[in-house]
Image (tube, rainbow, N blue to C red; front, side, top):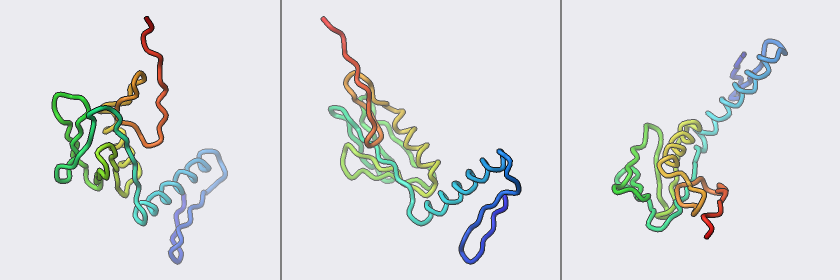
Length: 137
């Protein structure tokens, strides 16, 4: 791929129209666009905590989750990522790297993924959890 910077405009062009060059052209353009958006606006993932007694709080820069374990789960933010809890049941993961924000949000969700019977757990905002019918008498 040929990447050129002309008067604050980044241009990505491909050497040929072969299939690998076309796919790499789109990938390169998207990665550069995500870098620009990350630096100017930033990325954010919103997580919701559902369950009686489940909540999140901040301990300094660390995120402390009470999600049904005998002890609080503490998540230390990696470099470039910050957490915010505007409400006890809402966690915001923010950063400039789209991939890192998504990965940290997925790691937090994996601590207590939503279960299909009662829907308790940590889910992405707006995520649909398919509910199952429980045992019948």
